[in-house]
Image (tube, rainbow, N blue to C red; front, side, top):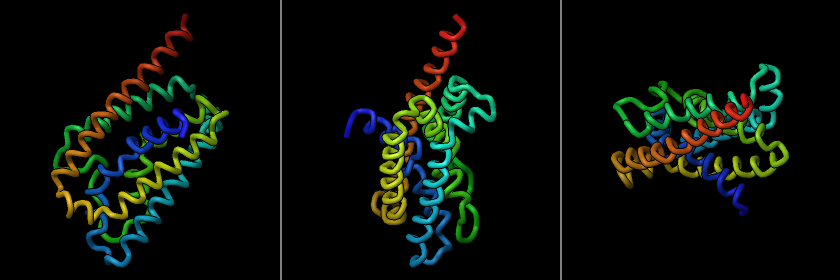
Length: 199
């Protein structure tokens, strides 16, 4: 695995935040039959993966249609990512992405916005728009990150029973801390580009 593929995979794993989504999965699937839980998790991960791929491959076109620059996307993505990371670090009684719905979830809230949230969508678009010639590498990175996410979320109930909710929250806070630094770096990169464009 080359350095770019590795760093992109780690970035996407952190942005998708599988461990942070464990409590939401447990809550969302509480009233779902145990025999259905794995199928629901895999289905939601597949939906999220498809959506992220669409944003990755169609990101450049999307930006062109809306007349958005890569600089504005970088700054906006950094801000959104920073806000989500802050809520992960300062975990409250509510989940980062809101309360789960009753019954078997379909697209909402697991696929969107838990897995394919604003920060994940902005990140894949940013990767693709900055280095379109490496789109294959970014697609592989997203695939690896989604496989990791699917495995973690498939064992969400088992993980929460094994380590307890406090450890899950601690992992989410640790992920949020790393994600905060990544968000600031994304924001600074956008600001540096903007300053260069002005000069």
